[in-house]
Length: 263
Image 1 (tube, helix red, strand yellow):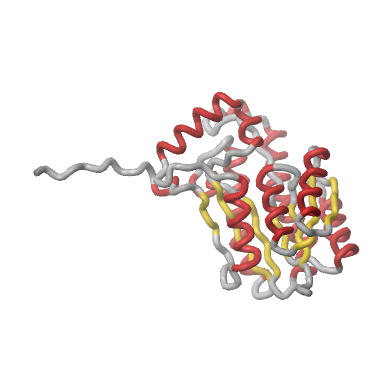
Image 2: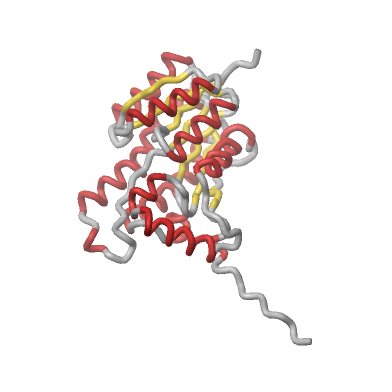
């Protein structure tokens, strides 16, 4: 019987985190499900992972709190005696827009950095000694094209994901060869998080614009992102320090207009 591995997925009650936890469970990982507010959804995520064959832990904790990060690592070690993968998915934003700076107060800016940047760092610090003992230790930071292209829901979010991208590169160097560290950078994602942030009508308009302006003509689903995270976690044994853009070619610019040659 193949020995199961263990993974921690932060912010795994809904959306990308829940899809990632389920994908890992199906691949043979026991999974720590983390949430800070969405208890009902977290329990649903946990139930789905159990149905997929995983042993699970459900842990409420805000990753901006270092003690909560250390408690998660300790809980996983107490239960499974190992941590093979960490997926830093938990993140927040303010849908203030990237040009309306007056809509973003200092406290909100700090809060976004506390969760998205410092929280991810704290989770890595809490888990790294255990990940180094794995035969295929992996960290995947869920970032965004906001950090690569300078576009996004707010300048604070853009800054935070730029920091996550730079941190990913440093961690990949610092933690090699025992731990691989990569990031996925999705473009628009069709999850509740986005809909709740901007409203259903605005979401549908933005989705239509996104699909019309990108080379591949489609937005990411949570499952699309989870598939990429799973590959980086389980299969990409020679890949580290990569920022994988899951943006349907947004970084390439608008598709060119095809000009027919004169006959």
